[in-house]
Length: 425
Image (cartoon, rainbow, N blue to C red; front, side, top):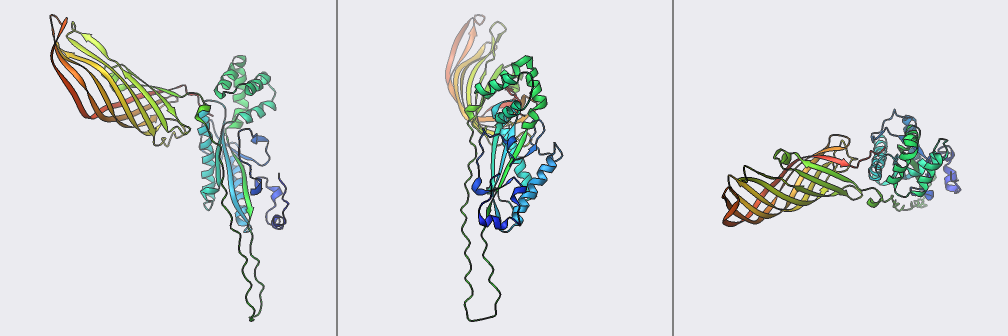
């Protein structure tokens, strides 16, 4: 714990005994969080814990009540002392290594936000600007420290994997392979629970100069003492940990449109979501019914290929820490060809389509979402009308035309399989 050397702070020590409350630290000793820190061995840290894959803060879980009371009590000690002011409340949210790095980064941020909301509810006078919120994501530094302090078969191999494997997803895979999964199971049962936390790191305070009160005196002609001007405190800029989307594994979704399936039109869509906040995604689709029956007198042949870029406006309130859920808007481009024939009369053609889409996605299972969307735009392209002759062995062209259409173009009720999705903890 850093010592307090200034005379000013020493004068107020009778009001606030710093040494008995280690999470109270002068602002001059502010330390930005970085992922190399091992918070579990820091005496200036208080943790609150979360249940498996949860972001809701339960006061009755794993000793949280005592930790939360300490946090709120410490904040009030600073607020109640008029010579002090809170400058920064630093919170770091974390997750265990189970699952994808991107998911766990978001999970850690949501846990930090949950602790912030709790503090704001208990102390409404705190401004949002004093909070320094960041995510530690997968707490690999914490896990390494826990492993070093434990004894189990496979300890050396785990430490070697953590040290020499840079990709976090590959680290987890290699640890799972140790001793037919027994090492990983030991970590789950004994160590991972200590990582599912929001680390309430420190409350940084500053000393506020106060003017000395003027002494009482009889009315005289002497001018009143000039008030002591308080120093202007510059606002502190807090840097938070940035996160790069390239640090995590690739993230995909595979879909099928149930409406097309009902129309006997096989289809598949593949979506990749992008960006450190999971706000963007890129989707490619193809549908390809290709049927001929009744001696070629009927045909249902369509090949459509399209791309769509989406921006996700919100995540669903129930599953806000899961990518590609909630409302989205998109822009698409598609093209293809078709041959639609009925009773020896039909049309062949090619087309191009451009338009906009809007939709909403719900989570309905661990790896499963449900999407509903509509799209509208412009469709255009040449076509040829024909008739089949000689038992439909020859197509006789009747006329040519050009399709030009503007209006609704697509409706979707799609099942969405998230692959690969590994749950963050």
